[in-house]
Image 1 (cartoon, rainbow, N blue to C red):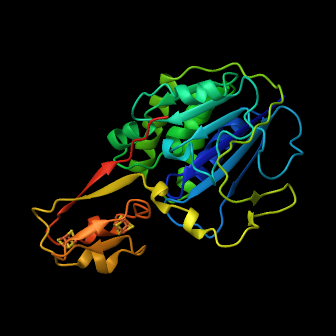
Image 2 (cartoon, helix red, strand yellow):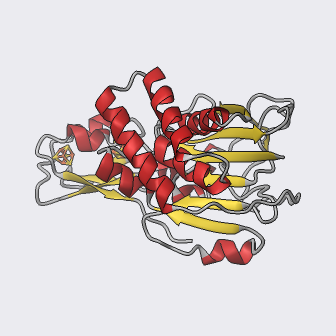
Length: 300
Ligand code: SF4
Ligand code: SF4
Protein backbone atom coordinates (compact mmCIF):
# COMPACT_ATOMS: atom_id res chain seq x y z
CA UNK A 1 0.00 0.00 0.00
CA UNK A 2 1.34 3.41 -0.92
CA UNK A 3 -0.47 6.73 -0.51
CA UNK A 4 0.76 9.61 -2.65
CA UNK A 5 -0.18 13.14 -1.60
CA UNK A 6 0.50 16.19 -3.77
CA UNK A 7 0.32 19.67 -2.27
CA UNK A 8 -0.30 22.75 -4.45
CA UNK A 9 0.25 26.10 -2.78
CA UNK A 10 1.67 29.52 -3.36
CA UNK A 11 5.14 30.61 -2.24
CA UNK A 12 4.78 31.65 1.42
CA UNK A 13 1.74 29.50 2.26
CA UNK A 14 3.78 26.60 3.63
CA UNK A 15 3.29 23.80 1.06
CA UNK A 16 6.77 22.40 1.62
CA UNK A 17 6.37 22.43 5.40
CA UNK A 18 2.92 20.82 5.10
CA UNK A 19 4.44 17.92 3.15
CA UNK A 20 7.17 17.56 5.80
CA UNK A 21 4.72 17.62 8.71
CA UNK A 22 2.55 14.97 7.05
CA UNK A 23 5.60 12.80 6.32
CA UNK A 24 6.90 13.12 9.88
CA UNK A 25 3.44 12.38 11.34
CA UNK A 26 3.23 9.18 9.27
CA UNK A 27 6.81 8.31 10.23
CA UNK A 28 5.77 8.69 13.89
CA UNK A 29 3.19 5.96 13.15
CA UNK A 30 5.97 3.59 12.07
CA UNK A 31 5.36 4.00 8.32
CA UNK A 32 7.96 4.60 5.61
CA UNK A 33 7.78 8.09 4.15
CA UNK A 34 9.35 10.40 1.64
CA UNK A 35 8.69 14.12 1.16
CA UNK A 36 10.08 16.68 -1.25
CA UNK A 37 9.13 20.05 -2.75
CA UNK A 38 9.55 21.41 -6.26
CA UNK A 39 9.99 25.08 -7.01
CA UNK A 40 12.29 27.06 -9.24
CA UNK A 41 13.50 30.63 -8.88
CA UNK A 42 10.05 31.43 -7.58
CA UNK A 43 8.76 34.40 -5.67
CA UNK A 44 6.21 34.77 -2.92
CA UNK A 45 2.81 33.97 -4.40
CA UNK A 46 4.08 31.81 -7.28
CA UNK A 47 2.63 28.29 -7.61
CA UNK A 48 4.73 25.65 -5.85
CA UNK A 49 4.19 21.94 -5.26
CA UNK A 50 5.35 19.42 -2.69
CA UNK A 51 4.89 15.68 -2.34
CA UNK A 52 4.58 13.07 0.39
CA UNK A 53 4.70 9.33 -0.22
CA UNK A 54 3.62 7.08 2.64
CA UNK A 55 3.93 3.31 2.59
CA UNK A 56 3.97 0.26 4.80
CA UNK A 57 6.67 -1.12 2.47
CA UNK A 58 9.72 0.41 0.85
CA UNK A 59 9.33 3.74 -0.99
CA UNK A 60 11.29 3.26 -4.18
CA UNK A 61 9.57 5.92 -6.35
CA UNK A 62 11.26 9.29 -6.68
CA UNK A 63 10.41 12.73 -8.03
CA UNK A 64 7.15 14.42 -8.96
CA UNK A 65 3.94 12.64 -7.94
CA UNK A 66 2.06 12.41 -11.24
CA UNK A 67 -0.75 10.16 -10.00
CA UNK A 68 -1.75 11.25 -6.51
CA UNK A 69 -4.36 9.61 -4.30
CA UNK A 70 -4.89 12.95 -2.56
CA UNK A 71 -4.33 16.48 -3.85
CA UNK A 72 -4.27 19.33 -1.34
CA UNK A 73 -5.00 22.71 -2.97
CA UNK A 74 -3.99 25.41 -0.52
CA UNK A 75 -5.44 28.28 -2.54
CA UNK A 76 -8.54 27.84 -4.71
CA UNK A 77 -7.20 30.30 -7.31
CA UNK A 78 -4.73 27.56 -8.27
CA UNK A 79 -7.50 25.28 -9.55
CA UNK A 80 -7.41 26.69 -13.08
CA UNK A 81 -3.82 27.89 -12.96
CA UNK A 82 -2.17 26.62 -16.17
CA UNK A 83 1.22 26.00 -14.59
CA UNK A 84 -0.04 24.35 -11.39
CA UNK A 85 -2.72 22.08 -12.95
CA UNK A 86 -3.65 20.47 -9.62
CA UNK A 87 -6.35 18.24 -11.15
CA UNK A 88 -3.85 16.39 -13.33
CA UNK A 89 -3.50 12.72 -12.65
CA UNK A 90 -5.71 12.33 -9.58
CA UNK A 91 -6.51 8.64 -9.25
CA UNK A 92 -10.02 7.32 -9.65
CA UNK A 93 -11.78 7.60 -6.25
CA UNK A 94 -8.99 9.93 -5.17
CA UNK A 95 -9.59 13.07 -3.14
CA UNK A 96 -9.26 16.70 -4.12
CA UNK A 97 -9.13 18.93 -1.05
CA UNK A 98 -9.58 22.66 -1.58
CA UNK A 99 -8.90 25.34 1.00
CA UNK A 100 -11.96 27.49 0.37
CA UNK A 101 -13.58 30.36 2.21
CA UNK A 102 -16.78 30.21 0.20
CA UNK A 103 -17.99 26.71 1.04
CA UNK A 104 -18.42 26.27 -2.73
CA UNK A 105 -19.27 22.74 -3.82
CA UNK A 106 -17.05 23.00 -6.92
CA UNK A 107 -19.73 21.65 -9.26
CA UNK A 108 -17.55 22.33 -12.34
CA UNK A 109 -14.86 20.02 -11.04
CA UNK A 110 -17.30 17.31 -10.02
CA UNK A 111 -18.84 17.42 -13.50
CA UNK A 112 -15.42 17.11 -15.15
CA UNK A 113 -14.20 14.43 -12.72
CA UNK A 114 -17.21 12.62 -11.26
CA UNK A 115 -14.87 9.82 -10.19
CA UNK A 116 -13.07 11.87 -7.52
CA UNK A 117 -14.25 13.11 -4.13
CA UNK A 118 -14.01 16.83 -3.34
CA UNK A 119 -13.56 18.07 0.22
CA UNK A 120 -13.30 21.70 1.34
CA UNK A 121 -12.51 23.56 4.53
CA UNK A 122 -11.62 27.16 5.31
CA UNK A 123 -8.02 26.63 6.44
CA UNK A 124 -7.04 30.26 5.88
CA UNK A 125 -9.94 31.56 7.98
CA UNK A 126 -9.01 29.18 10.84
CA UNK A 127 -5.31 30.12 10.57
CA UNK A 128 -6.11 33.84 10.67
CA UNK A 129 -8.33 33.36 13.69
CA UNK A 130 -6.09 30.94 15.69
CA UNK A 131 -2.56 31.90 14.59
CA UNK A 132 -3.08 35.42 13.23
CA UNK A 133 -1.34 34.66 9.92
CA UNK A 134 -2.44 33.19 6.59
CA UNK A 135 0.29 30.52 6.78
CA UNK A 136 -1.44 27.16 6.60
CA UNK A 137 1.28 24.50 6.68
CA UNK A 138 0.05 22.90 9.92
CA UNK A 139 -3.61 23.20 8.92
CA UNK A 140 -3.00 21.62 5.50
CA UNK A 141 -0.91 18.80 6.96
CA UNK A 142 -3.65 18.16 9.53
CA UNK A 143 -6.32 18.03 6.81
CA UNK A 144 -4.23 15.61 4.73
CA UNK A 145 -3.45 13.46 7.78
CA UNK A 146 -7.14 13.18 8.62
CA UNK A 147 -8.19 12.43 5.03
CA UNK A 148 -5.71 9.58 4.55
CA UNK A 149 -6.73 8.13 7.93
CA UNK A 150 -3.34 6.60 8.77
CA UNK A 151 -2.22 9.14 11.33
CA UNK A 152 -3.43 9.77 14.89
CA UNK A 153 -3.82 13.24 16.34
CA UNK A 154 -0.94 12.48 18.75
CA UNK A 155 1.50 11.73 15.92
CA UNK A 156 0.33 14.83 14.08
CA UNK A 157 0.89 17.09 17.09
CA UNK A 158 4.37 15.67 17.64
CA UNK A 159 5.18 16.26 13.97
CA UNK A 160 3.92 19.87 14.01
CA UNK A 161 6.06 20.60 17.08
CA UNK A 162 9.24 19.00 15.71
CA UNK A 163 8.99 20.49 12.22
CA UNK A 164 8.15 24.01 13.40
CA UNK A 165 10.87 23.89 16.06
CA UNK A 166 13.34 23.01 13.33
CA UNK A 167 12.21 26.11 11.42
CA UNK A 168 12.94 28.25 14.50
CA UNK A 169 9.37 29.27 15.39
CA UNK A 170 8.89 30.42 18.97
CA UNK A 171 6.93 28.34 21.51
CA UNK A 172 3.83 30.54 21.37
CA UNK A 173 3.55 30.26 17.59
CA UNK A 174 4.15 26.50 17.72
CA UNK A 175 1.38 26.02 20.30
CA UNK A 176 -1.01 28.10 18.19
CA UNK A 177 -0.19 25.89 15.20
CA UNK A 178 -0.81 22.75 17.29
CA UNK A 179 -4.21 24.14 18.29
CA UNK A 180 -4.95 24.91 14.63
CA UNK A 181 -3.87 21.42 13.53
CA UNK A 182 -5.99 19.81 16.24
CA UNK A 183 -9.06 21.79 15.20
CA UNK A 184 -8.71 20.98 11.50
CA UNK A 185 -8.02 17.29 12.25
CA UNK A 186 -11.17 17.04 14.38
CA UNK A 187 -13.30 18.84 11.76
CA UNK A 188 -12.70 16.41 8.87
CA UNK A 189 -13.36 12.72 8.28
CA UNK A 190 -11.08 10.04 6.81
CA UNK A 191 -11.83 9.02 3.20
CA UNK A 192 -11.42 5.48 1.93
CA UNK A 193 -8.84 5.62 -0.85
CA UNK A 194 -8.62 3.20 -3.76
CA UNK A 195 -5.49 2.41 -5.72
CA UNK A 196 -7.05 2.55 -9.22
CA UNK A 197 -4.91 4.19 -11.88
CA UNK A 198 -6.51 7.13 -13.65
CA UNK A 199 -4.55 9.86 -15.33
CA UNK A 200 -5.94 12.99 -17.00
CA UNK A 201 -4.45 16.26 -18.12
CA UNK A 202 -6.46 19.45 -17.93
CA UNK A 203 -6.87 21.31 -21.22
CA UNK A 204 -5.53 24.60 -19.83
CA UNK A 205 -2.00 24.60 -21.20
CA UNK A 206 -0.93 27.89 -22.83
CA UNK A 207 2.55 26.58 -23.48
CA UNK A 208 4.13 23.19 -23.35
CA UNK A 209 5.56 22.36 -19.95
CA UNK A 210 7.57 19.20 -19.79
CA UNK A 211 8.52 17.73 -16.48
CA UNK A 212 9.56 14.16 -16.92
CA UNK A 213 10.74 11.76 -14.32
CA UNK A 214 14.36 12.40 -15.30
CA UNK A 215 14.31 16.21 -15.11
CA UNK A 216 14.64 18.07 -11.85
CA UNK A 217 12.91 21.23 -13.05
CA UNK A 218 10.29 22.27 -15.56
CA UNK A 219 11.32 23.14 -19.11
CA UNK A 220 9.44 25.68 -21.23
CA UNK A 221 10.05 24.67 -24.82
CA UNK A 222 8.15 27.39 -26.70
CA UNK A 223 9.42 30.98 -27.00
CA UNK A 224 7.72 34.33 -26.40
CA UNK A 225 5.17 33.17 -23.86
CA UNK A 226 5.77 35.54 -20.94
CA UNK A 227 2.72 37.63 -21.91
CA UNK A 228 0.59 34.54 -21.34
CA UNK A 229 1.63 34.37 -17.69
CA UNK A 230 -0.71 36.57 -15.70
CA UNK A 231 0.94 37.01 -12.32
CA UNK A 232 -2.37 38.42 -11.10
CA UNK A 233 -3.38 34.80 -10.56
CA UNK A 234 -0.75 34.58 -7.79
CA UNK A 235 -2.65 36.91 -5.49
CA UNK A 236 -4.04 35.72 -2.16
CA UNK A 237 -5.02 39.25 -1.13
CA UNK A 238 -5.94 42.06 -3.53
CA UNK A 239 -4.99 45.71 -2.80
CA UNK A 240 -7.93 48.13 -3.02
CA UNK A 241 -7.28 51.87 -3.35
CA UNK A 242 -9.53 54.31 -1.50
CA UNK A 243 -9.38 57.30 -3.86
CA UNK A 244 -10.88 59.60 -1.21
CA UNK A 245 -7.87 58.98 1.05
CA UNK A 246 -5.24 58.77 -1.71
CA UNK A 247 -3.09 61.93 -1.80
CA UNK A 248 -1.47 61.07 -5.16
CA UNK A 249 1.94 60.89 -3.47
CA UNK A 250 2.98 58.16 -5.96
CA UNK A 251 4.88 56.14 -3.31
CA UNK A 252 3.07 52.93 -4.30
CA UNK A 253 3.81 53.61 -7.97
CA UNK A 254 7.53 53.93 -7.16
CA UNK A 255 7.68 50.81 -4.97
CA UNK A 256 5.60 48.33 -7.00
CA UNK A 257 8.09 45.66 -8.16
CA UNK A 258 5.86 44.48 -11.01
CA UNK A 259 5.08 47.87 -12.61
CA UNK A 260 1.48 46.89 -11.99
CA UNK A 261 0.47 50.46 -11.18
CA UNK A 262 -0.10 53.23 -13.70
CA UNK A 263 -1.09 56.81 -12.95
CA UNK A 264 -4.37 58.42 -13.93
CA UNK A 265 -4.53 62.07 -15.13
CA UNK A 266 -4.72 63.22 -11.47
CA UNK A 267 -1.61 61.13 -10.61
CA UNK A 268 -3.60 58.67 -8.52
CA UNK A 269 -2.68 55.01 -9.20
CA UNK A 270 -4.67 52.35 -11.06
CA UNK A 271 -3.94 48.65 -10.48
CA UNK A 272 -3.40 46.29 -13.41
CA UNK A 273 -5.26 43.29 -11.96
CA UNK A 274 -3.87 40.89 -14.58
CA UNK A 275 -0.35 41.48 -13.36
CA UNK A 276 -0.54 42.66 -9.72
CA UNK A 277 0.88 39.61 -7.94
CA UNK A 278 -0.38 40.64 -4.49
CA UNK A 279 2.99 41.26 -2.83
CA UNK A 280 1.25 44.02 -0.80
CA UNK A 281 4.26 46.33 -0.79
CA UNK A 282 1.95 49.16 -1.89
CA UNK A 283 -0.35 48.40 1.06
CA UNK A 284 2.53 48.52 3.53
CA UNK A 285 4.19 51.64 2.10
CA UNK A 286 1.18 53.88 1.46
CA UNK A 287 1.70 56.87 3.84
CA UNK A 288 -1.99 57.75 4.49
CA UNK A 289 -3.06 54.06 4.56
CA UNK A 290 -5.29 54.57 1.55
CA UNK A 291 -4.90 50.92 0.48
CA UNK A 292 -6.86 48.10 2.08
CA UNK A 293 -6.86 44.35 1.40
CA UNK A 294 -9.50 42.00 0.15
CA UNK A 295 -9.15 38.20 0.07
CA UNK A 296 -9.31 36.83 -3.47
CA UNK A 297 -12.33 34.57 -3.87
CA UNK A 298 -13.02 32.65 -7.08
CA UNK A 299 -15.83 30.24 -7.74
CA UNK A 300 -15.49 27.05 -9.77
S1 SF4 B 1 0.34 44.35 -4.44
FE1 SF4 B 1 0.80 46.49 -4.93
S2 SF4 B 1 3.04 46.59 -5.02
FE2 SF4 B 1 2.48 44.39 -5.14
S3 SF4 B 1 2.28 43.94 -7.33
FE3 SF4 B 1 0.26 44.56 -6.66
S4 SF4 B 1 0.14 46.73 -7.06
FE4 SF4 B 1 2.31 46.19 -7.11
S1 SF4 C 1 0.92 55.45 -1.80
FE1 SF4 C 1 -1.19 55.66 -1.14
S2 SF4 C 1 -1.58 57.84 -1.13
FE2 SF4 C 1 0.28 57.53 -2.30
S3 SF4 C 1 -0.48 57.36 -4.44
FE3 SF4 C 1 -0.38 55.30 -3.62
S4 SF4 C 1 -2.45 54.91 -2.84
FE4 SF4 C 1 -2.26 57.12 -3.12
